Image (cartoon, rainbow, N blue to C red; front, side, top):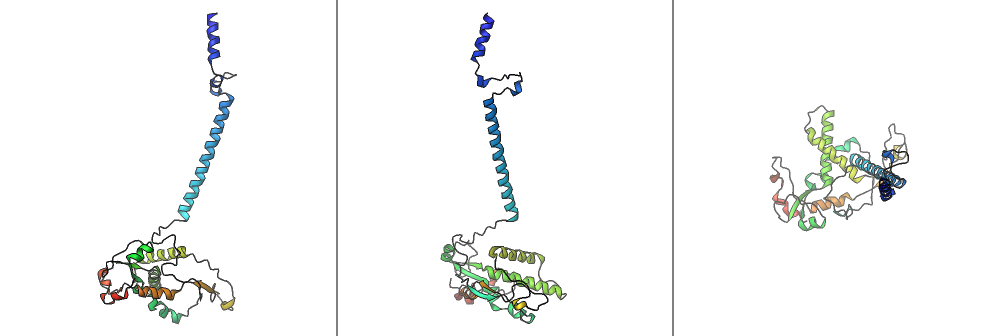
Length: 263
């Protein structure tokens, strides 16, 4: 009787929700229905969160590989792209097809001079435009030296053209591969940065009527920035840069034109 009574009390003391016994005696599957449902819900939620995390990481990895971000801390993100020089963007210029006889005069234009693209800018201008600091201007401690992107890119394009002409005429290459590769990367970045979305017409139409090999967009009008304004601005802010060819950067600046820098 005592043994039977103790057993009965023990059975009654057990909480049914904590029981590890099952009707068929299988201890590994002895969870109550309530616990099984809770475990199932937790597992489903965990799987859903894990799946969402994997998808997000896959998207992030894809963007990192195919759309690498470039750190352009030289630009005030709140300002429009034209604010530095305040260029107009409604200038209509036809897409040209230059005759070979015009190549050299166009490429040797004074407006595309490397020297013209080197400017000296004041501390106030630098702060206002949120530019990173640069090399100090030798003759004015309040100014720093910058190179305009347009002239830097033209400089690169001119060197690539020179390399192509040297190759086609059998001359030795005057530019090293490292510099040329740098220039190609610079121009590629320019294309991505500006991403001109002008649709260019195709086929033997307009100025390409009767052409054996029609080129897209020739003669078509496109909206451009006012280059003449850039030319004027770079002249007004000139750093008086002159490459005298001795390889010493300190000798690249001529003091006789320092008054031209008015930034």
